[in-house]
Image (cartoon, rainbow over all chains, first blue to last red; front, side, top):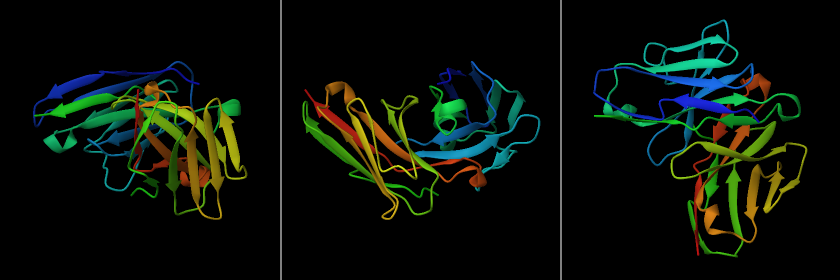
Amino acid sequence: SAVISQKPSRDICQRGTSLTIQCQVDSQVTMMFWYRQQPGQSLTLIATANQGSEATYESGFVIDKFPISRPNLTFSTLTVSNMSPEDSSIYLCSVRGWGQGYNEQFFGPGTRLTVL
Amino acid sequence: SQQGEEDPQALSIQEGENATMNCSYKTSINNLQWYRQNSGRGLVHLILIRSNEREKHSGRLRVTLDTSKKSSSLLITASRAADTASYFCATDAGETSGSRLTFGEGTQLTVNP
């Protein structure tokens, strides 16, 4: 399985500001994903981060609010823009495995965001 | 929107007992994956079962899949206090759907020492 790290692990931010979350993987991976988990709820996919092209966003999520970068096969960032208290969530990146574990998806430790 | 539903939403058992969690889904799948999440932290991948498989084991975990009923179950045998966590199922409809995972609502398992 991949080793995935995220920075920051947690943050408390003021309304109207932006936060960029980093996701680093120890191997080159084709597919990276960003999920959101609101308090007490399950995970919802925000977007698929594509290397060399724009991210593919799910219904209800837009690039202006959640811009994503994917400069190479081991790194991605998610920015939460113009934050409001409703953005308080855990944000998780995940990657799809390779070889025998191609279908498995592995998750980073998450970034816990609180917006005041 | 979430297509998975899990039951029960919460389960409390004594150490040593078995815990069974169920997951239902609505569309065709390529595979189904189970995850554990401890207290709002990252997800730990437990097991993947493909659509052509009916049962899979990993240590104290046993997963079944019934594609005719669109349901899966996760059995944890001889539970331990350390198994206390939230458990999620997630369905993968395959590459035609972008390999995105659709998560169930989760089961909160509490194992009492």
